[in-house]
Amino acid sequence: MVDGALLRIKSVLVKNMKKYRGKLLLTQEAAAEKANMTVKYWQRLEMISQSDLPSLQMISKIAKALEVPIWKLLQ
Image (cartoon, rainbow, N blue to C red; front, side):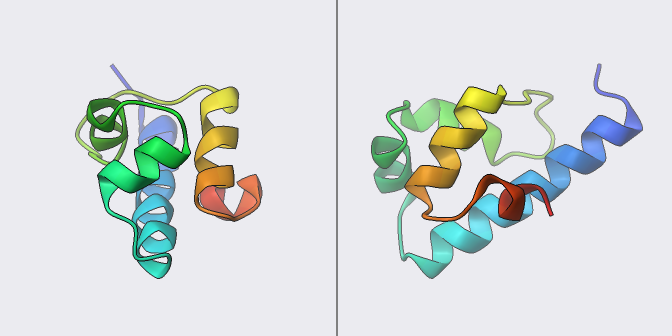
C-alpha cells in the first residue's frame, strides 16, 4: 500500500506526465514507444489509483521521452 507521501509524489508525477505528453501532442502509445516501455505500463503509471511508482531509471526514460529534465516531472 502506498502511504500519503508516496501518493502525493505519484499524483505530481502523473499530472506532469500528462501535461508534458499533451504539450508534445503524444498519445500514450507514442510516448511509451519513445520511452521504450509497453503501452500498458505507461497507462498504469498515468493512473493515480495504481500504486506503481516507477524506478529512477524509468523516470529518466519518461523524462527523455517527454523532452524535459527529471526534476520537472517531480515538481
